[in-house]
Length: 468
Image 1 (cartoon, helix red, strand yellow):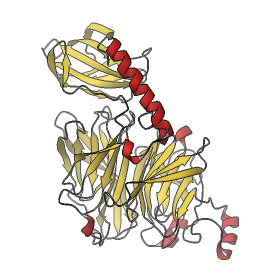
Image 2 (cartoon, helix red, strand yellow; image 1 turned 60 degrees about the horizontal axis):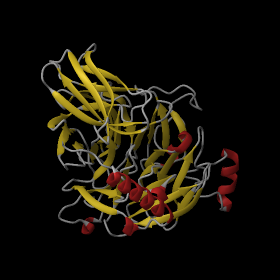
Image 3 (cartoon, helix red, strand yellow; image 1 turned 90 degrees about the vertical axis):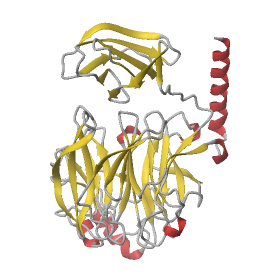
Image 4 (cartoon, one colour; image 1 turned 120 degrees about the vertical axis):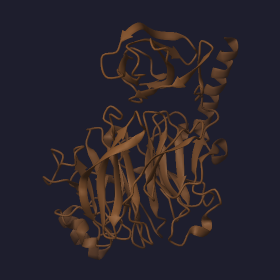
């Protein structure tokens, strides 16, 4: 008990000090996957795995703790040009795997991309069906975007590039150069400013999309030869392309800005450095990064930490990490627990292959050794090894759903604190819905727990659970 108290105090003090003077040397960079081919999009699943979309159309699932990599699906109709065509975006349904769907955007022809919904079988761990959401989006060899996010409102947000046809970005009847807001079937969401799918317009080549504090939406995009941008997206906002580069500060821009009420960027960089994937960070695992946008750069070969003000409508300062150490950085992922993962993009066929290492492309985890994040793996409950259970959603707020052995009709459930104390227990719980079990987590303090499920078939499984 005394030892545990001392360790907890030491970790708390270390975290406190780190908040005042966090440097790159304070954090560890760990390789969790290598030998990939241009991982374009990283997604955190309720199974506590990183789901990866490679530009080739391969979807894989990575256990970042064991480094086991499992291929889930290979898209067979991906078109890859000499430049940046390919598979660009991946999203899990917000109620996955109750709603067993993956959303994917990829180019299927030289001048067209599509958004599809893949049905995933939890039992067989394979994709079993495909539904086209948007069948043909005008595109090109590059400037196809894109990123996918589900907002706090439950709607799907999808950013698209202009496909090298800049005027499209200002045409409300066309999809390119926009942020789109749709329901999960691809229909225009109610309340959209123009009565169609368009949420904002005037974008050139969006590469990052992230929701921050209070549901604010941020987007990163490439400029032409000047003014890479980070924008705060407002409904109906016009962001100027192709008539405005960066801020409204040139004589030929001022009239258009006034007439169209152009929204100016939070930040812009000249010369261009090619910003890509972006994530919002507000976790205790790296205290000095709280309330910041983490932004990857390709040409700039760096991870930038963009510190936001409390309102989220301005960037107060920025830091540059890992400059020219890892090569091109394509995407960054922040998990609900505050884990941070980076994907390199060194195998791209656009003149940067000299950056590639024999182990590229890779995924890294940025780890703060002073942060008390500990996950039991494998699970040992009452001295016995158990298999990992599939649980969702993560984090859980009121109800946790567990996928159980179909042979079980009744189960015993115990929820353990990370110190090993049983904080909730239900014996002989009846299974009422197709191999799924609901566990009530209301009233529990926020934090990490271990769920243990033992069925009448003899099956025993456990899983880590984040309660918020």
